[in-house]
Image 1: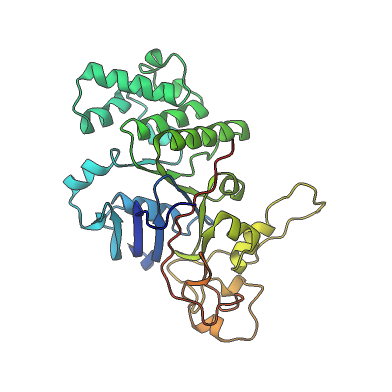
Image 2: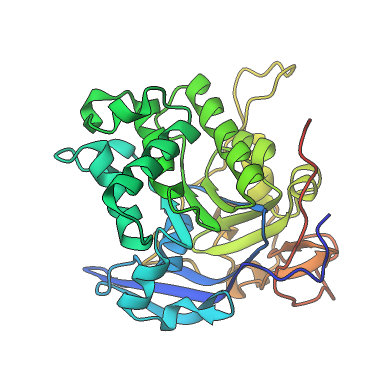
Length: 348
């Protein structure tokens, strides 16, 4: 357990991000609150389109404006609101203090530049070193992520590497300047299970070695169980449950969270069909009134409140938040911002 006197490295407060489209105004992120502490892993979980990636991109001001707009909220890093920073100020932070691993390394890496040139760009931008020193740093970064013959690999191009190798290159690029915060957006997408395990183990080792914080964006609850300290479950642009990984997995409070767990196969269970969450994720341009999950919710009864009033995220139990009118203990719960300094013990 981290000391509660420790300061968070990142605070996202009431963040709302909208986009303008042919359908009109779309609120992709709606009042999100998160807190991330040093050396902590915060997993952001949810179905595609729930606002996970937009939240992470907003942290680096990478949402294109227009069509996007940071409507409300603050993103506080080192006691400074990043949403008030100029492009020049953000350039000093991106890749240096905060780095991001993007989805799909084959599309994120530039196919016409060598691996070395792409890693060197960030090093030369943020560190006062010569080109030869930058090459040494790039070689060390590839060695750190388990790529052999690193000096030779610097001259190779993305198409000459496997998917797992390209993902390791993306991690090396992100970590070359030793950032304090890493945003990992689906870092194991499209990789086979063995390579996924290797990539996640690599991230854990580098986090422990460098004291880095990680925001892990995923839809894979197995990845969350193995790697996260704290979990934020998102649905339709908002957080519906937030707590320590043990609390959320052992006692899920929101029906959407329970639905996600029930849809997972489990060892030792003999089922012909997995349980599914009925219905579809709502169109963000046309959200239902009241709780956005209520058209799909099995817990909903004749209580008209679900269809008319959107439940706020409340701290129902110590360090465990939920946004559901029917959650046990919801009535009289506290309207506090999610803030958990918990880190579970590393396995030895």
